[in-house]
Length: 167
Image (cartoon, rainbow, N blue to C red; front, side, top):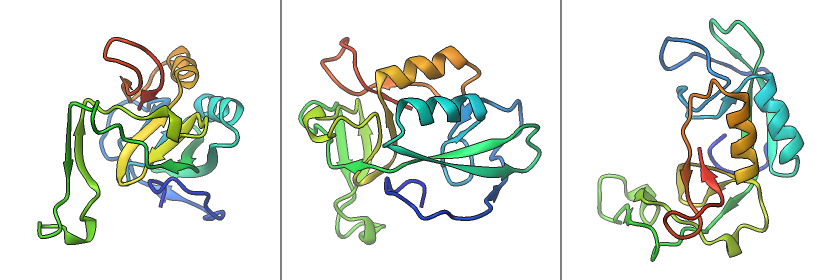
């Protein structure tokens, strides 16, 4: 449910296990549901920089030494710029996952059309649940916090330009 890009009712107490061992990161999507999980500093940055685009829910992560939060993007847009993305693959109607027909199977060199995102600073892409898009401002704030378990890829502008980032 945290990959849908929609406003959610309070889910109540949440618990999860980390997907892998190792040091706790300030921000990561490497858990069992690929839900973005953040420490207090990162959660605060999302609350302050994108209050209309996210929900922040406390989550009990097994073995975590400090409080953690799920960052839920509450917006979702049909915004893939297929012509300028390097390669786009869709699930076929008669393939192994017919229930996902027409959704994106993979996108290499993702580019988005910013005219379709309504000035959102954090959002998901309709039909491509694995993408968690953040603005340049949020990317910079997160990099300033450090200890991230994510990397960013540019998703707007021409190759070599700069703007929004994918976490």
